[in-house]
Length: 145
Image (cartoon, rainbow, N blue to C red; front, side, top):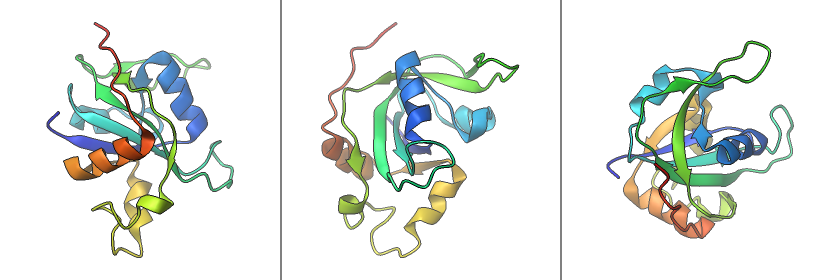
């Protein structure tokens, strides 16, 4: 993997993507997905369980590797056709962010660490990805071609 990313979505939306073997970001926009390439590592951070709720989940909820192929449009009923990328999701549990705040490059010593999460997708260091993967107990998925 040459690059690592954190995407942001509710846990409910992340679960749909895990079940379907795909990722979506920024309400289905294509442009951010073009920055993510096959072989890149992706981890999802979920501020909430359900979009619009304020349950304070604040956890990493999925981790995997982007599969070969280009972004494509999926069909989600009602004419909504968001852009997606296929992902090999690792077997992993959820990991709250709070115990990791002092260990992650993108949060350590930053009182406003959550600001960049508002962008929906941003790159992180290999070290941060490894810390998160360890906290989630991630085991790589079998590659599906």
